[in-house]
Length: 330
Image (cartoon, rainbow, N blue to C red; front, side, top):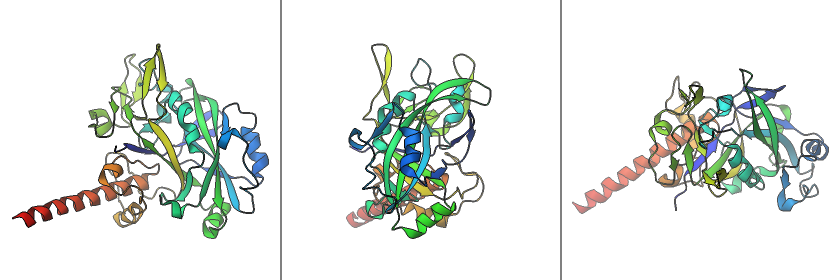
């Protein structure tokens, strides 16, 4: 079965109780990781670790790894229909138009554990720079710019980057490189506006195809946003429940700040460095078929453009191969 693939860029950091839009999540280097991480995670009932035990600090030692903490993604609250994003959470939708419901993030956040830490989405395990060692789901009362509140979750990662990658570790330690982008695989996505659930080969609804990140009025006459909800939910006994098999987090990559000014999900505004995009597109080595690649989303906007370049190239190769087969038959 061909999986529908989604990746995400989440765009928020905390300034007191208020969330502020940023391009990518910022990582903080932990100088005393065991102590500092335990302050973040130790008393959190939503904490999880591999095999439900504490981090193996002997295996993941400071001599071998550089440790970073990053609040990688936030969830959104949806209305009783199970898909419409409440206005207070509209600003939590990321810059690529992706979001997770509270239920979905709670059901799938543990899949971060053991995932790879890459550089610029070079998704070849032989090129992995480290591991995601632990994850914490942190309940937060989010207050939007209008003072409206909603109870959401943040996923906090403990990222271990191997010190054998000296240049990368140096860039992280010096603060030259501070941003991460994450990735995941979706068997299903859901339109936040119409509620349509899309599987592997389903055609996008008009909202996901053309209206991501656009504002509209909900049934109450309030302004909310159109987004692609990763995964799917089902109503059981009157309660919306997430399908844990419909979404999986697969990686977190160190990435440079967005280089493509004005790039958005459906079109590009401003100059696009196609040569750089083509180079980055070669990093998606695990997704080397058109069927897989076209369902992959990456967090950072340069990566999103690179995906489009890669997809266009695969389509071109497929078209040329078809023409070649026809020519041979004539």
